[in-house]
Image 1 (cartoon, rainbow, N blue to C red):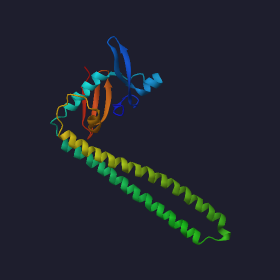
Image 2: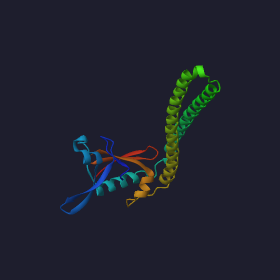
Image 3: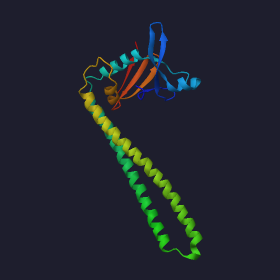
Image 4: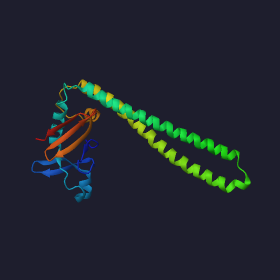
Length: 205
């Protein structure tokens, strides 16, 4: 759960630790920011691992028989729309980069001794613009890859949730495929967000 359980107050992931209680050592999940920086996140709650596992399983089992297909397709449609928008931005950046290359070639073809200083400044300005666009393109390509991964994950999760059967044991691998986030929404409550955007709140007992 180290990449799923999130603190609602500071946004940090939770981290597993152990406490010594009268019955021996117990696993406890705490906000990493609170563990490392104390007062920077004073409101976060700590959760016994056994209680957390039971609550997550209850949330997962609440999804059995739900209409997964419709909601998941809506989420995938939004991701596809975002991907198309990124593609459009990538095309725009590439067009601007092509314009810069064309301008550079034109300057170099017509360079003369009397215009060297002015030409040199113009080339430097083009290089700066090109560098900024290259960085923007790198970010957009990374976002595009994230979209692809998210779409694939949504499709995988939809199939898993569609065929979900009641779970009796905590399964990190499976839960990592169908859950996108677990948030501690109160001292004795968590909210589980499944891939596809469905959420379910569960009380820890």
